[in-house]
Image 1 (tube, one colour):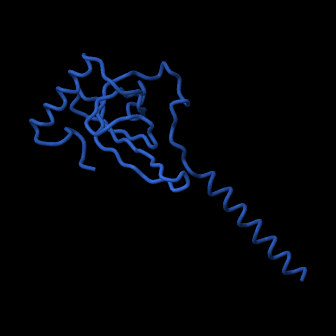
Image 2 (tube, helix red, strand yellow; image 1 turned 135 degrees about the horizontal axis):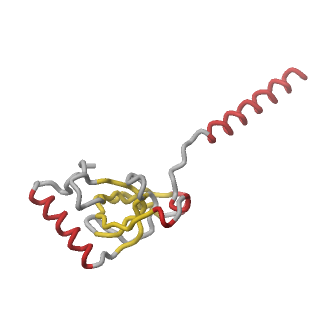
Image 3 (cartoon, helix red, strand yellow; image 1 turned 45 degrees about the vertical axis):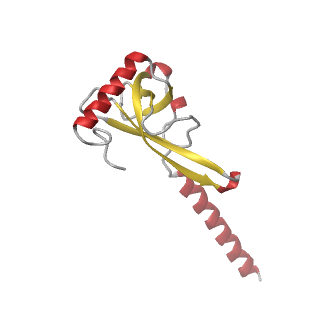
Length: 142
């Protein structure tokens, strides 16, 4: 009986350690709060795709995931995604993206409604996409 209880304790301890150490190894995506506000520049972007994932624990709620392109003036278009976004955006909408000055691959959605000068950048990008006969220039079909 003592051996059985020792075996059960060893198994439970092993499972607990496995759970603790396996959860510690996951890489966490950088969050905006991890940076200084001065590390970012505001640039126009465009929504290229929106997906929604049902969250059954919340009832009939959905998590909206936004895929977007930015750096629209350049020939090298950059893409980003943000999960569980709470903004009223649809595909093709222009909006602002916060881009890290040191690493342009780090970006976050800043907010909707482009100013007129930035709306011209978006229109120019859409015209370039149309000329190249693609939906969004520089963005792989997702």
